[in-house]
Image (cartoon, rainbow, N blue to C red):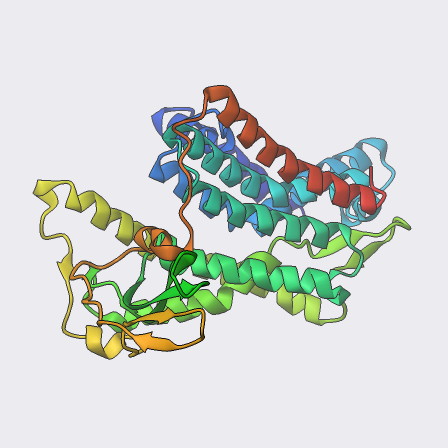
Length: 393
C-alpha cells in the first residue's frame, strides 16, 4: 500500500504547492462557500456549494484515507503493526464513524442551508430562499437520522421521509433551478361558502405543462432526457449521504446495506451522482446564462425562442376555464380565460392562488436575524437529537 499513499500525499501537496495566484484563488473561492453565512452569495458560490453536496462520498473517502495514513504511521512508529493492518484500528474508531464521517455528510448541506439564510437576510424575501433552504434541511435530517439509526431501511417513517424529500428535490430542480417546464393552462375556481357570495375564495391549479421556449440548445429531446435521468438518479443523491458502514452501539462496524449488494451499490451511487450533477449543472448554467444575457445587450442572440415543437411537448390539454361553486352545490361555466403570451414562471404561479409569501421589509434587523437563527437552531438541534437517540453523545 505504499504507492497509493505516495499518490495521496502528492495530490495533497499539489493542492497548495505552488502557492501562487491559482492555488490561492482556488482556496479563497472555496472559503466563500464554507464560510457561509458570513459572505455574500453569488451564483458561483451557490453552484460550488451544490457540487460539494454531490461530493459526500469522496469527502468521506478522503477522511478515511487521512485516518488510515495516521494509523499506519502510528503502527510503524510503535512497531505494533504494519501498513497492511493499519485499517484494523479504524474499524472501531468512535471519532471517525460517529463524528467525522457524519460531519463530511452534513457539512455541505449546512453550507448551502446557511447560504440561503444569508440570501433571505440580504434580499428581505422568504421565497424562494427559504424554500431552497428547506430542501437542504430535509435532506440533512433524513441523512442524519439514517446515519444514526441502526436499520433505517426498515423504518416506514424514514422511508416515507426519504421519498418525500427526493420528490421535493426533483420538483425544485425542474421548476426552480432550471425552470424547465412552464404552466401553459390553468383552471381557476371560485368557491362560494354562502349563496350571497359573502364568504368566497379563489384558487388555481395547472392543467398543462410544456418545455420553456427560451433555450440555448435546439434539440428538445436532450432536455427531456436530462429531466428523466435526473428524476431517476435523484434518489442516488439522498442515498449517497449514508456512509457504507456505521458503528453500532456495541462498537462493531456494520454494513449499511447487507450482503454483496453493498459492494456494488456504494460505488454505483457515487458514480451515478457525479453523472447526475454534471447534467444538472449543464441546465443550471444554461438557465443562468439566459437570465444574464437578457440583461446584457452585447449577449443578444446567445439564446433563442423555440416554438415549433411546443405543441408536441405539451403535457395536458385541458381547457383553462373558471368555475364557480355555489353554496347550493351548482357548478356553472364562466368565460374561458385567454392565456398570456409570456411564459409564466413558478414565481408567478405561487402568487396565483397557491401561496403568497410575505416579504420581510416591515421587519427590523433583529427580528429577521432572530427568525433565521431559529431555523439554524432547528437544523442543528434535530441532528443532535438523532445522535443522542443513538447514544453516541
